[in-house]
Length: 270
Ligand code: KIV
Image 1 (cartoon, rainbow, N blue to C red):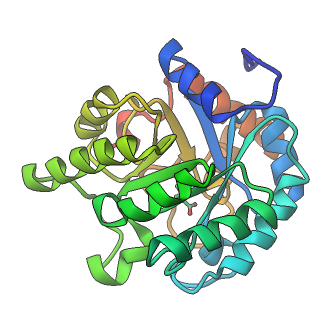
Image 2: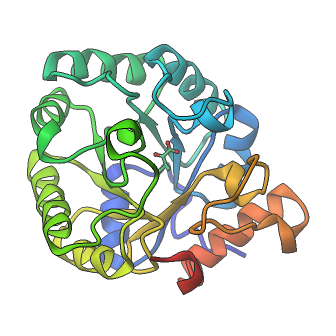
Image 3: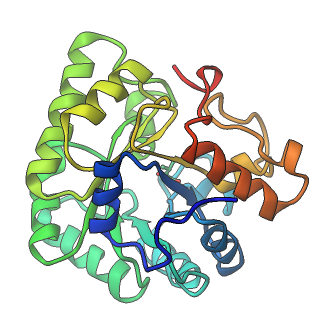
């Protein structure tokens, strides 16, 4: 059984308290109300409407074509399946090129998508936008490491932060995001040792995906861990359907594995 330390609605302050208590934060993506309900009931604390929906729902080759309207729609229908979990929704590619556009689009995600927090990819380069969104009372989750919206610039989905210079930029980015008022940061595909250092160097929760077991929490794309995604599953994900046999039990097994620091194992880390 997963041990919910609270049955109350999860807030950004509760996430921060969980970091302080050393309790792992469990996150998964969802794109519709039915999956959202399953995740919420299983004890997932942070439900992410990721722009990964461009790939796993729409069948596109990257997240780049996803629009604000599509994010708001999926966020709205996910919100209907949630009672306890915090709803975090991605601002998609090119929806935060300057602070005012960023605030306008974050407002759409909050007002039409019923999100509790918006997520943006990048560090120091997008700091003005992060600051401006936070100043309007909208909680922000950063996203560092592999930035899927920049796939055409970085030339593929590769592990980031492997050399010292890159690692230092990621560490500095995290500190700047914290200073700008971000409530949490997702770190994607970075070495486990760097993620451990980063988690210790900021006070806000660090949620890893392909970033090792030492982060404050973990997130996966739900379709990957349920073995629904077409093609090869990423190394950092795990097929939780294999042993569980049904969706509810697979999600519960994931919650347990994250809470007990059994997932990710070394085989899922870089
Ligand atoms: O879009 C998404 O699903 C994400 C996760 C990979 C963290 O950003």
